[in-house]
Amino acid sequence: MGIVVPAVLPPSLEDLEEKIGRLARIPSVSRIQIDVVDGTFATPASWPCAAPQEMRDMIARGEMLPELDRIEYEIDLMCLDADHIAGAWLSLGASRLTFHAESAMDLGRLLTSARERYGDDVLTFGLAIHIESDLSLIEPHLAQVGYVQFMGIATIGRQGQPFDRRVLEKIRVFRSRHPEIPVQVDGGVSLDSGKELLALGVSNLIVGSAILRSADPAAEVAKFEALAIPHGV
Image (cartoon, rainbow, N blue to C red):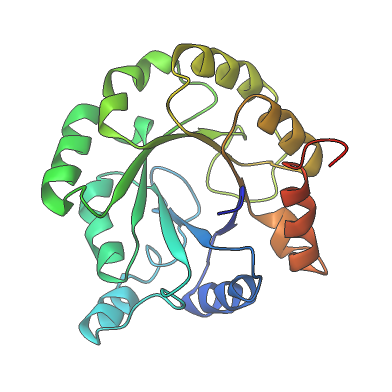
């Protein structure tokens, strides 16, 4: 699996299908993150929160996310009460769920409920933490998750924002305390910031607009993947 995980923030089902179609043609892409914004915890609302009946209809028809034979789907749930929303995505074939630590009044209960409701034998759960939040918000719950996602932008839910360098120190401290926990970064990731993040021990770079707005997404993914190649190799 590569270091790059392309991210899609779909305003509509048609947009989601079109972008997944483009990304799935890139041989090195084996995982795609779908950003889900409920319009309350973060804004503006994305699909399917803006058109919930469409997802219900898909599930009723037995439809699944495309390319499940080679693409693993990670759902970034920027939503309140996200454990209730998660089930629909699992019905469509998602296998990784990212909960935002700030989205729940009782984070421990949220994670326990999700694991009991959906099981963690075939699912991987992750916790996202925002720029302004202290690490103490997630540290009591690390035993319940498989990875931590640091947000690299100040305002979540919108692609194309500048990288917030405050996240670098937050990651540095976290890695010193919890070197065994895989870390990924979402938001504002560029070739320059990506190089710094990998040097800090980040496992995966979640990249949205830099790939999808590129004239050649496959070439852009290759540039990011090349960051992981040691100098001189």
